[in-house]
Structures are given as C-alpha cells and as structure tokens.
Image 1 (tube, rainbow, N blue to C red):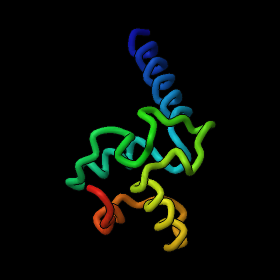
Image 2 (cartoon, rainbow, N blue to C red):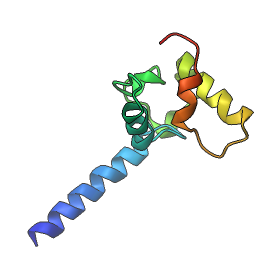
Image 3 (spheres, rainbow, N blue to C red):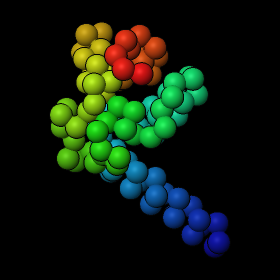
Image 4 (tube, one colour):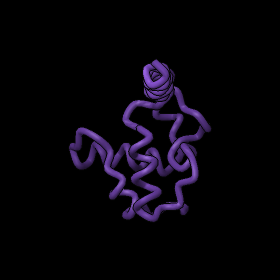
Length: 93
C-alpha cells in the first residue's frame, strides 16, 4: 500500500510537469543540454519566464536562444528540437 501511494504521488507530479512545460520543451531536453556540457541552469536558458506553461506558450516567450532553436527545428524540418543544435548557436552564451 505504501508503494502504491508513492507511485500515485510520483505520477501526479510527473503529470503536472507535463502540463507546466511549453510545447516542445521537456525536462529531458534540459537534462540533455546539461549532460552535453552546456551551461543550462534552468528553463531560462531558452525561455524568458522561469516556469513556462504549456497552455500559455507563445514563441515570444522564448529568449534569443529559444527562438534560434525553434528556427532550427523549422529549417531542418524536424519533428522535435535536438539539444545537439545548441552547439551551433553563435549568439550570446
């Protein structure tokens, strides 16, 4: 029973994260950027707000790096954003 409550709590937390994240961005992208040696400290590495919300997302909510990533996604006709592209970003570090 104890493990069931923990599993339910973890599921609710993960579900709420899915609701709070902007379209295209996920905790996995953030973690991939960090593990790839990029200096990402929080969501503001690509976003203007500290905790972007998926249902309120607008491209204007992205900083220059985030807008560049969105442009790369379109340019490469990709279905999703790849953190490897950040290594080619020449804007402000």
